[in-house]
Amino acid sequence: MNSLPRPAVEARGLSVWRGGRKVLQDVTFDLPAGRITGLIGPSGGGKTTLMRAVVGVQRHVQGEVSVLGMAPGSAALRRCVGYSTQTLAAYEDLSVRENLEYFAALVGATREQVDELLARVDLQAAADQLVRSLSGGQRSRISLATALLGEPRLFVLDEPTVGLDPVLRERLWELFGELAGAGATLLVSSHVMDEAARCDEVLLLRDGRVLAQDTPARLVERTGTGDLDQAFLRLIEEER
Amino acid sequence: MTGTAATATRVLRQLRHDPRTVGLLLGVPAVLMTIFRFVYDHEHTGFERAGPALMVLFPLVTMFLVSSVALLRERTSGTLERVMTTPLSRLSLLGGYGLAFTLLAAVQAGIVTALSLGALGLHLAGSTALVVILAAVVALLGLGLGLLASAFARTEFQVVQFFPATILPQLLLCGLLVPRAHMGGVLHVVSDLLPMSYAVDGIHHLAREPGASAAAVGDVAIVLAFAVGAILLGALTLRRRTD
Image (cartoon, rainbow over all chains, first blue to last red; front, side, top):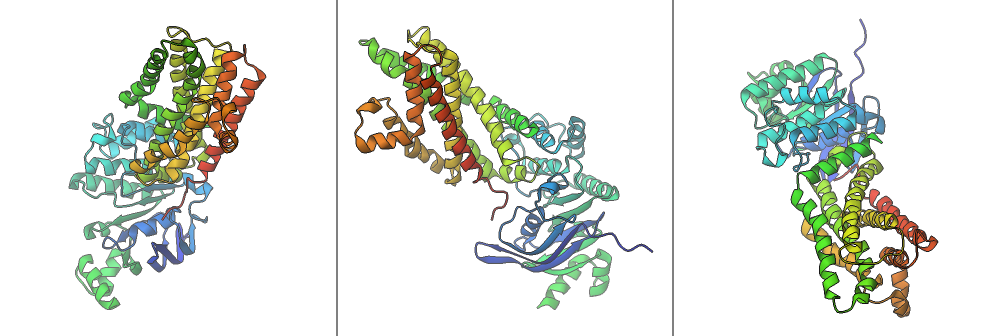
C-alpha cells in the first residue's frame, strides 16, 4: 500500500497576535490533499485569522505553516490558492462581470470560465448590475466566484454559503465536492453544523484553539453522541 | 504587463460608471480657465503671465483628489488585499493606475490647451505636445502624492484633508502668485524642494521659448523623477500582510 500523499497544508504551533491579543494559540493541523476540511466554530473563535494565515495575508504569525510545500503567500503560490473573503472584496462601482473579468485577467483565466462561474454561483441575471446595487447574498457570491477563477489547487473559502437559500447552498456543496474530486484541497469555514457533516474532515476551532480534527462520523462516535452539534458541545465540556 | 493593462482597463471602467466625476474632471478646468481669462479682462498680460501655470495645476489637483480617494478605497474595502493574493505585482497595480490617470490627464490637458490657445487667446511659443506631456507627468505626480496620502489616512474625510496639507503649499510657492525669483531666502529654498515649482518653471519655459527647449524638457524630467519617486515610495506602503 502506498503511503498517504503529503497534506496540502501543514501547520505546526501556529500563533497569531492581533492588537496585542493572541487570537490563535499554538494551533497544529493538516489539511489532507484532495479533501474538503470544514473549519467550524463560533464567530470570534479565530476562523478567519487561521484562513488569513494560510493564505499569507496575516501579520504577526508565529509557528510553521507550509502550503503546497511553500511558505504562505509566496509568489509561486498566488496562482495556486483561491481565496474568498467573508467581506466583499470587489469593486462596488463595477458590474459583477467586470469584477470577474478583472480578477480573471490577473490569474490568467478565460472569459469562458467567467461565464461558467457566473452560472455556477447563480449570478447570470445580475451579471451586468453594479455590485453596489446587489443584495448581501449576491455580494458574497462574487467573492466566491473570484476565488474559483483560474486553476487553484487549494481553495480557502471563508463562510461561502452564508445567507444563501437552501437550493443554492446545495449546489455549491456539490461544486465543492467536484473540485475535491478533481484533486483540489478545500478549507471551508462555517458556523453551521449541518454543513460540517458534508465535509471529509472537520476542524473544530474555539477561542483560538483546535478542539478536535477528525471525520464527522468519528467525531460523533468518539464522543458517544447522536450528532455533530452534541459532539461539539461534549468536546467543549471535556476541554473545561 | 497584462496586470498593468488589466488594471488600467478596470480603473477606466470604474470611471465610465461614474460619468459625473469624469464630466467634472474634464469640464471644470475649462470653466475655471475661462473665468481666469475674464478676471484679467482689463489686463491681458496678467492672463499671459499666470494662465500657463494654471494649466499644470489642474492635473495635480484633480488627480491627487481622485487617486487619494481611489487608493484609500482599495485599502479599506479589502480589494487591495484580495488583489495582492493574485500574481499581480504592486508596481503593475500602480502602473495600471498611472496609465489610466495619465490618459485622463492628457484628455483634460488637451481640452484646456485647445480652449486657452484658441478662444481665450493665450500665446504659447513652445510645443503644445510638450504641454500635454507635462500635464500628464504632473498627473503622475498627483497619483504619487495621492497614494502617499492614502497611506496616512483611515477615512475619506482624513484623506481629503491632505489636500491643503500637501498641495496648497505647493500652489503658494510654485511661482503662480509671485515669481519664484522674487521669493526670499527660506521660501526660495523650500520652493526649490517642491516638485510643482519645476512644473511651473517648465510651463513658463514653454510659454516663452519656441519648440521643446532644453530647459523645458529638463523641467519635465525633474517632475517625472519626483513623480516616480513618490510612486515608488508609495508602493512600499501597499502591504501584502496586514493585521
